[in-house]
Image 1: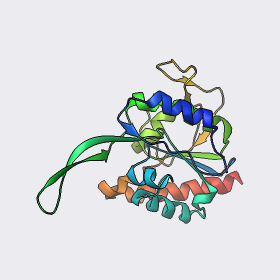
Image 2 (image 1 turned 90 degrees about the vertical axis):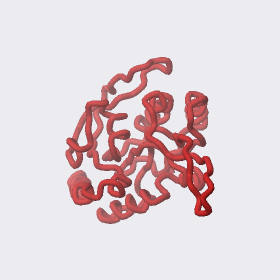
Image 3 (image 1 turned 45 degrees about the horizontal axis):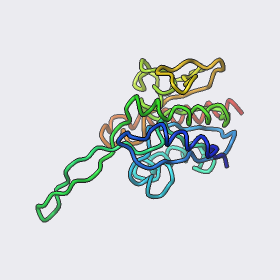
Image 4 (image 1 turned 120 degrees about the vertical axis):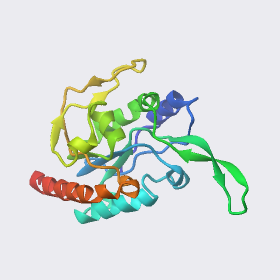
Length: 215
């Protein structure tokens, strides 16, 4: 199993200190996998268990992997941000009282930049056959803010990806090497937009077909 060096994890934790985030989740999976999956950021359940994609979206993701004959143990699972971004909100209890609690939220660009060295290290060292960004956050971390999953999902792309050249840079540069990428929707998207399910299922069948062609 591949694990980033502790020095890279410490760097990520230091760079994101002071943001409204909590915890830190390592990527999970083998070196040289068939697939590398890149999501947004861990949520509440992921932090508790220390395992990426362990909640409801994770179950959907495992179903998608199963359709192409893969298991969690055969893929590397990562994300643009490794700490859980949260916002405070009010939850109404059954007895009518309210409590303040943390809710998940998408990561900001500054948070994505803070954890860029972590994903950069993985991209440079894991060497997957195929990268599958899950949703816009993962996709735009790789290909820039103009990239939209609704336009690019299911397409085979061979492109350079963004990386942070220097730790104090405020913009990304492009890698010299190219990566093979097939974007698809985040598995959680079908919960609030069920109309995405047919496209999501078709994308995964295409991912499976491409992997077979790659041998």
